[in-house]
Amino acid sequence: MLAKRIIPCLDVRDEQVVKGVQFRNHEIIGEIEPLAARYAAEGADELVFYDITASSDARVVDKSWVERIARVIDIPFTVAGGISSVEQAQTILAMGADKISVNSPALRDPDLINRLVDEFGQQCVVIGIDSFYDAATDRYLVYQFTGDESKSQQTRWRTADWLKEVVARGAGEIVLNCMNQDGVRNGYDIEQLRAMRAICPVPLIASGGAGAAAHFADVFLQADVDGALAASVFHKQIVPIADLKRALQQQQITMRITG
Amino acid sequence: MSLVIVDTSCANLSSVKFAFERLGYQPEVTADAARIQAADKVILPGVGTAKAAMRNLQALELVPTLRALQQPVLGICLGMQLLTSWSAEGDVDCLNVIPARTVPLDSQGQPLPHMGWNTLTAVGDNPLLGGIAAPAYCYFVHSYAVAVDDYTSASTTYGQTFAAMIRRDNFFGAQFHPERSGAIGAQILKNFMELSDADTRA
Image 1 (cartoon, rainbow over the protein chains, first blue to last red):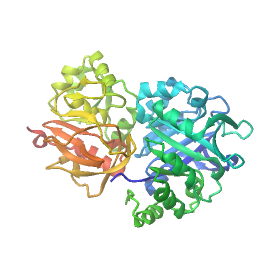
Image 2: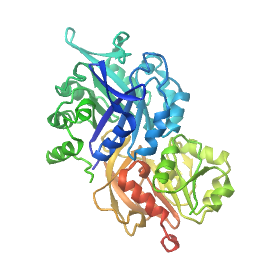
Image 3: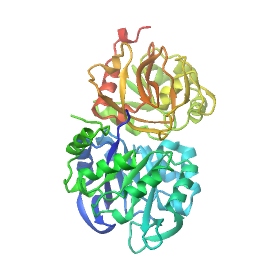
Image 4: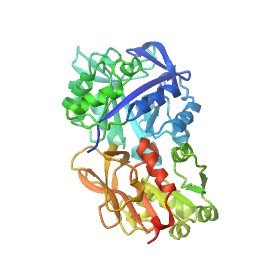
């Protein structure tokens, strides 16, 4: 059976792992390679590295650390942040990243998705979607440039429409970050994730809101996502990965248990 | 022990190279036919589409070289599919060293690509799975697959049951990515490097 994936996300800025609350007030968590190696050893199924400032500063992710990570870890990893051309993606994949994740540049230039898929194949191309629940209108709205609060802005897209659009263009996986939940550790947005799962034929990764082991169980059992991404619960060691996976397995959720 | 990784002009050869370096080997990445022929072991990696990969191999004039190799060869992911006779991905003739066909994976309604960690079930005597206990989780990313047949040496189920590993004589294939499959993947690569002549005799 295909296991559900537990995916620590490392927000990278200036070659260090940082974490903010609802994308704000970033604090330094630690160095990239030791954290990556620690998570791999503890049983993480995959890692995501986001250069959180890259898109909003119109610069490309600094790439030297990609190769250093590829040398030390033996699980798959994704690099995100400011990848806006086939050439930039090529460089990162050639350094050993397994997938590239594109967010704001795809909103600016949706055809970028097609070009990346044509060049590298669907399996390499992840689309990140930052989705904000607007309670006033009861709509899920796509935001861009969320790495920098001063530049973060609503797009013209509703989340379901953008998800269908990127899948039609060949996206191989979707990471849906529910912005209202991000960093506050009150649980994943089950209702939104369940709605998007129903229209998403490619793997769907939940992001935003994990604060306890029970939240992971909820999102797998109630929203049937393929993976659950989280940052602060792992960085702050609130939920040790090995313990989490054993607890989920006891609830009949298929887990890869190591060691 | 010389090891060559065939430079198929696809992205992401680094992770395969680094995986062997972690095991203490010094692989050479090359598209030079003489270097490939002279190697003790050959890795055929692959990412992207079968059509693009075969076009690259033809442009590099490597098809006859690869087909004639006598030493152990390991095709990884798309590289495994290239060992088969034909792929539906672009309706392209492949290397045809293992008479199997690569067809769309029938996930029976589950998300595609088949992406993530899934378990291997050994079929017959598979020297690459020596020393590996169940459950053997490995990392898969693919939408096409080889159906289970006489050349299957391990199977995996995602909707349909398909060939996770294939083997004919000296040609071995893994649909998953051993270089990204943790300790189990590392053991598979180590087993490949330690294959003896007896293991690969027809």
